[in-house]
Length: 367
Ligand SMILES: *Cc1c(COP(=O)(O)O)cnc(C)c1O
Image (tube, rainbow, N blue to C red; front, side, top):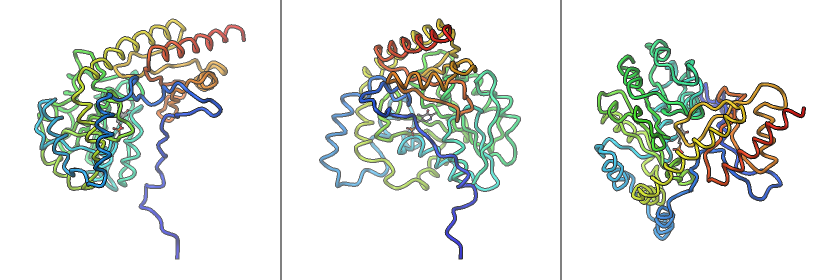
C-alpha cells in the first residue's frame, strides 16, 4: 500500500509567494509590494462591510444578483454574462478547471502573472510560456504557438509585473488570428488605472465572438484585496459553464456589500486614479534621474531595473530598502531577477522610497 498521491502535475506547482507585508524587528513598514491601492478601501465600502456583520449567519445570495446588476449597469453589460468570484484568481482557476486538462496547453506570456501556470497545472494541463518583445506580449509569437492542443491563452492587459500593455488594435489582431477553439482570457486587473486613449479592457472583444473572456478585480483600484472579489464578463455559454463549476456560495456577503459600495463611490475611484497618474509619473522621473531603468507603466506600480553588478543589483537594493522599513517586490519568479516592482503609494511613501534609492545609488560611487 502506498500513501495517497495527488493527480500528476499537482506536485510540479511552484507555490505562489505574495508580496511581503512585514519586516522583522520593524514596527511599521511602508508596504509597496502588492499593488493594493494607495488610499486603501473607500470609507463607504468599509461601512457596508461592517453593516454586513449583523447578518453573518445568513448565506449570501449565491448568484450575486445585485452586484452583477451594478457591475453590468456601470459598464453597459448583460448581467447574465457576468460571473463573480472570490477574487479574479478564482475565475482564472475555474477557467482552467473547466476548459483544460491533461494533454492540453495553456499559453501565457513570458513575464505574465504567476497564477496562470499554477491554474494550468492544478487542472492537469501544461502551461506554455511564450516569449515577449521588450517586456510586452508578442502577438505574432502567441498566434504562432497556439495549436491544436491549446485551450486557453491568458494575457494580463496591462501586465503585472511589467506594467506594459497591448493597445486595442493589437489585442484585436490577437483575437482575430487566434484559432476559434482557443479561449482568449484578458485579465484586466489594472484597467481602471490606464489613462491611454488607445487602451481597451476588451469588452468589445468579448461581445464580438464566443471565445473571449475578460476578468476584473476589486483588489486593485477599489482596495478590497482582503475581501476577495472579482468578476468575469463572458460569452453566455462560458458564463453558464463557470456557474456550473464554481462553488454555489463562492462570494461572501460582506465582500459583495463592500464591492457594491466601492463601485458606487465614483469620486473615490477617480481620486485614486488621478493620484496614481501623478505619482507614477513623478516616481518614474525621479528613478530615471538616478540612472535606473524604468519602463513606462500603465498600472499602479513601476518596474525598476538595477545593474547586474554585485552590491548594486536588485537583491542589494531590496535589502537596502528593507533596512529602511520599505517593502517592495522582488520579481525573480517572473523571470526578472534584476528588477524590483514598486507599488505607487501615498506621496510621503513615494518620497521616502525615492530618497532611499537615491542614497542607495550614491553609495555606488564610494565603492
Ligand atoms: C492583482 C492581480 C489580479 C487580481 O487578483 P484577485 O484574485 O482579484 O485579487 C489578477 N491579475 C493580475 C495580473 C493581478 O496583478
